[in-house]
Image 1 (cartoon, helix red, strand yellow):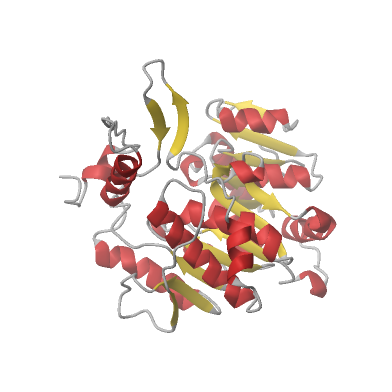
Image 2: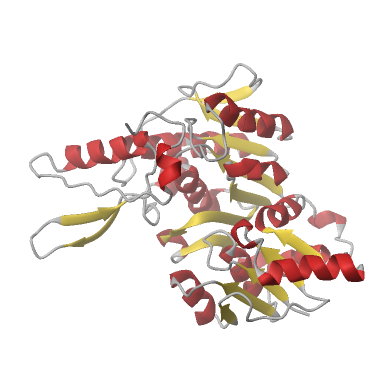
Length: 367
């Protein structure tokens, strides 16, 4: 029996392979269409990686966890066919379904919104290691320098307990009652195609709201409706900045004031927004935390991969930055931030959309 991770080159689902490896699972198979920095990191850990779909034959007792982008791959289709034709108790989850199942065992806190999900989740995980002893697991969709260039956190002292939780998912074994909801799980919660509705959240933090994913959402009202659904599904509390305009259907949201924090980060306004949200969360989790303790824990946060990340200085003397901003407001903020930091320099911006239709379909802000 193997645990097969299909689409393992994805920044989110690759975390599952890493975590399972760290918990001592030796029966892993990672599959992706092409080699990448992410698959190389898996290989470096000793996880077998298969490059190219159709090069692994799924077996009747395999466990399949797949990224949504690979649902039509031979491995995933074969698994569903085996389950249907042979009436096998084959366990098949897409990435978001698996996170949903996992989230039931933790006090799960989701970080969501149009912009700032990865940054606020990463900041919470990095600072939470110092301030929240019950923080057991964290997953984010970007590489984090403070996490050894990884995009997950696993509390080392709790590995044997987490192994029991994962074994329960895979085998159906009962979990000791004392382990259920014992630890916090900080998680980047993706709103695309309403994926975050799979999650069992105790709390949700909303960073910003503006139209995105126009290949799926009809308009801003439709986009906001997904967050309303998640808010209604969240068990305990939703947090957002006071300045964030939420639909009227949001009720009982804890509003966090925007505060200036002395953090060493290039994006001042964005850093303050993320830090204010994270600090507000921590004060809910532990009201005894002081402002000085919060600031000390967040102060040295180094940011994350491809978020206004300085790459190098070119032979010409030009400084090269990369940023993941993909909506018009993010691009504007990035430009204004660099202009303020380098007022006497010329700026050249190169925008490469990941998906052209995501930029042009149903929106006016890029025109």
